[in-house]
Image (tube, rainbow, N blue to C red; front, top):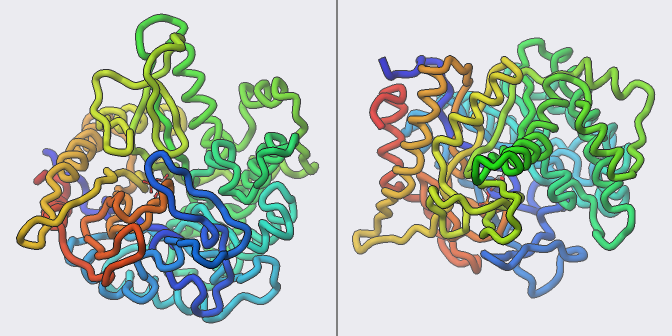
Length: 470
Ligand code: BG6
């Protein structure tokens, strides 16, 4: 038997800031990503000081999911989606982030969105904060380095848990929470030139851990049916050779970059190796008396994670390097690489699924996976994305082995950017992931018209056959 169970959550994933657009509509306040410029491979995005004339901000329009969601969800329904992952834009609900009263128009938008999903047979899977926060909280409070952010975030959580009770069951507290150390700017910790940059980054991480654990407790109290997970970016690294030094380096990278975050959120305490690491950095992370108790009480219900690629670790400084958005590692000679330098490794998915499950024995949710590719339209106006089908097929095969042969408990699979959207890392539209093409280019031209790629019909048959027909 090679089918998955009928309740396996097949679906797709997007995020508010990369898809919704409508950045100043419906009472929404500016978010951090509204001041992110466009970049490309080799050219980083950066944050400007407020919105400046003559600068192009790709997230302002996204792919206008805000006005197209009915049509988009209808297409996802046609593919047979059983769930749809998106995030709530915090600044639609609290334009500044520190208000007492939420913005009703923002709340109403997500009411309509979640109703539409449910009507179309999809469970909403909601990330509470996906790489964004109200810009006001960055400018006036210094982002997550400030403890006050915990209260603002919890107030936001309370409002959305109350409002969407009975509609949303699956929540994740922070997208790729490990990015707070890898890329602290995402948590509103700016200014790398300051001496205390590293200390502020670790402080921000601590605040997010406490906020997440309190949110889990609150979410369970408001609705005991809620399933609240963490969301971790998995940075799989293998030793480049069997040399013990390489093995040691790879293991260290796995622990520090990936497991340290899920260890805290699943087990509810800082592991020994994190304490030692912070000690070695010589920084002080301030904790309030109840913080450690909170971590214990607010353990997550499942581990959500993204998986795109893997790299290797080597003690030889002269080997060739490669990397993804927040990862850097050594090039693995056995793997192919995408145009953006991400190494393609389907077996790495089964590897990380088993590592997580051995470690925690709680359900896992693959909430991001996919291939960013510069799709070309052929003479019939169609995109034959066989490369994407090959990537997803190989990953689904490995996921199935993890479930059917290894016994790993997986809730669902939501490939990233099921509808083309703005790339988080580069701000490009041309780095596409979708089954659904959106007519929009890197300069902001295009009609936003949606059309099906070849992978659309392929994924439809995958879902309809419960993963049997790949
Ligand atoms: C994940 C993020 O890291 O990777 C997404 O959660 C992001 O927001 C995705 O879009 C793919 O990265 P990129 O840079 O290709 O958009």
